[in-house]
Image (cartoon, rainbow, N blue to C red; front, top):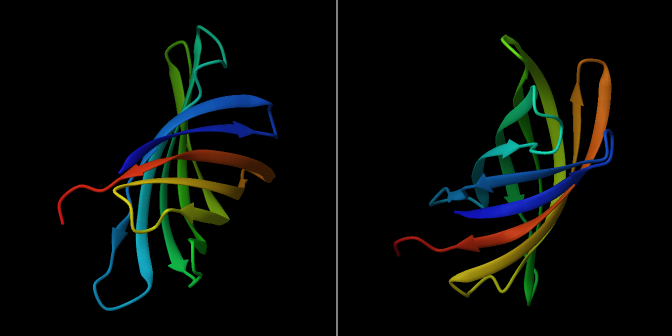
Length: 131
């Protein structure tokens, strides 16, 4: 689990988020749920995005590249009116220091929702919890 920061190039907005990576025991597949909040949109406007991704770990020596995709659910609120919108994610990234308990990562994601697409860059740290 760990925090991340990002930039959505579609609307030039910064985001704060958190993610978890849940490996499946017998496959190089990782479940990757996450949440993102856009704090700079405005005082009466809020945007929260839930991501439900699956990623495939590729093998490398000093880092782990990955590719993946999934679905997203975005909730935009203006004052007392809110609306949910579903989208699709495609992503790729690099996980550095794969054997450490603190692992930095960087990724790029392309989100398709509402007839638009957004390119989002993220970077953060993952902290090992448990064994």
